[in-house]
Structures are given as C-alpha cells and as structure tokens.
Length: 385
Image (cartoon, rainbow, N blue to C red; front, side, top):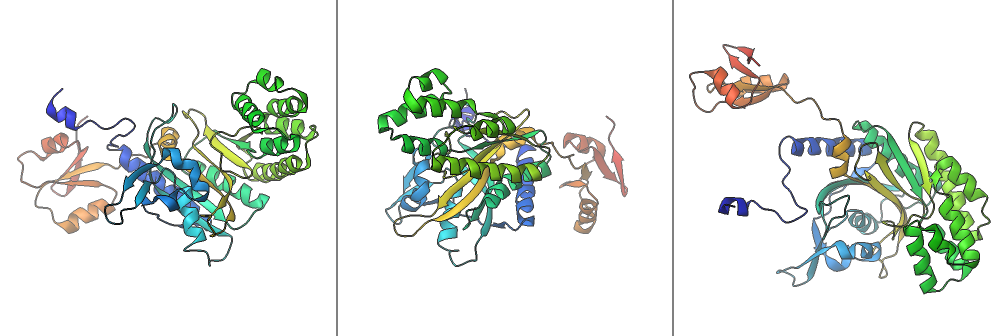
C-alpha cells in the first residue's frame, strides 16, 4: 500500500459519498423536507455539536452510549457530537420556541455521527431527515406523524411500504400491574426481545400467560388487534391498546395501500418512547427506512417537558430503494462562449461543461470529459456511441 493509499483510508463506518450519489442524496433530502414543509413543518437547523449536558439531558440520555465527546478548548466544557437530531429539535422547541403556539410542527435534515454502527447499518455517519409534532398528546397527532413519514417516502418514489406499529409502554404497564421485581422484568424483557416463547413461559404464573399472549399477538394489524382485544389486560395496559387501535384506524384510512403490522412487545430502539411508536420498511431495503413515535420533549432539570411525537428517516437506507433521477445531459462548450450563452444552455436543461482553453477537436474533448454532446457552431452535436 502506497503512502497516498494510506492517507486516503477512512475510519470504519465512514465513507466518501462520490458523484452521482452525493447529488442524489442532496436531492432526495430537499424533496423530503419540501414535502414536510407543504404540511406545515417549518425547518430548523441545530448545530452539529453542543454542550454535553444539554445534548444528553432528558430523553437525550438514551443516546449517551452512541455520542462522541470532545473537550471544547474555548469553554473548557465537554461537548457532544449529535448521534440523533430528535433531541436537539426538542430542545429548540422547549426553549427558543417555547412561546410559539402549539401544536408546533418542525422538520430537520442533517448529518449525525455515532460511536459504532450496527449489523444492518454499519455506517457511523449518515444523513437524517424528519419531523417533530410538539405540544399535543392525541391519537390524531400520532397518526399524522406516521402518515406524513410514509407519504414523504412515497413522494420520492419509494414503493411497497410497510409500517410496523409498536407499544413500548405496554409491557412495562403489565409488569407494573403484576408487581414484578427488577430481576423478573429484566428476564421478561430479554425473553420478549429475543421472541423466545419458551423463556416467556418459564416466567410462570400470570406473567407467562399475559406476556405470552402479547408475544403471540404480533402480526398483521387485523390479527394483532383481534388478539389484543381478547386479552384481559390491566387498566393501564388496556388504555395503551385502545390508543393503538385509534391510531391504527386513522393510519389505515390515510394509507390504504401500505401494509400495516403490529408488534405489541417490541422495545429495541424505542427506549425513551412513551406511547405508540413505529418503524417503516420497504421491499428490497436492507433494514428500516425510518422510525419514530411518542415521547416527552424537554431538557428536564426544571425546564419541564411537553408531549411530542415525531419520526426520523435514515437516508443511507432510503437511497437504496429510491429510484434514480434521469441524469441531465452533459454538454461540452468550447472556450470562448460567454456566460450568457452558457446560462441559456443551462436553463434549457443541459449540464454545461465549459472549456477553459481552446482545443482542436471539440468532439474528442467532449468525449474525454464524459459529455454526450458538444456545442459546435451554435448547435449541440451528439457524440457517436
């Protein structure tokens, strides 16, 4: 390996995004954000790095293990590089925009950096785009977040979508009613996360019966809601189930062509969520395209919290199932053409590659610069294939 090759190496999980992928990603991001804006979601732009105590306050504590930390040489305070933008948007909403009328609708897009990737998402740096609906706690708000995220993906050409709805607060509500110890809760959580019916049965007693029934309820929305309705749940858990049914009915009405499933015991990745949550998938995608759900927005420590619901799309995965736009035709324009002429050609739909020095053979130069056409004597000439 040469010295140049060594200098070009990047840390694991980081990569250069080259043409045309960089432009494709930028275009998809702008289309997503434009879709959000069309439904009243105003864009905000938080900083890439901020003080650790605010970045990891409140619900931000859930991202602590994925957050890079550095010392700020100016303030001598610890800084954190954002691993997720949701927490930052919640901070903006509950501080700088605390006097704006509710419900507050905000959107965002930007890069995040994580300490390590996962098996399905090995990248440690990638783009996010998403929305937050802050200041209201209703089934209609939950449904709006789900529908808008799915509709935005459809707007950029992603087909064959499916949405998996979850209730990460359902199992804790059941465990509270049953009076399980911390050790028993940990055993139950581990068994449910692994979808291990035998381990759930080993819990014994009413815990095995209720949690086993919840585990079996996962599946299509129709199957799941029928199964959940047949379970004699404690009052708090029954209220969670009823809220899910309301959200599901609203989502089904607005997304008739999207497959809906329910997993009432799924918790992984939803640790700070406080109600109905969701993941979005598409045929052919290597993992989830996005996720979101209900949570409490705020910094804590006397600053207060607000009910919120939102969702985040992962652009590295979204790009894998997004149709590629037709590339603009590249036109080589020899040196000497004025800016007005080049601008006219660009406005007509050409990607104008301007020559900087005179050449004897414009067609050959066009081919060298990977252009399909050359501008000769006031006419675009197509190169022979």
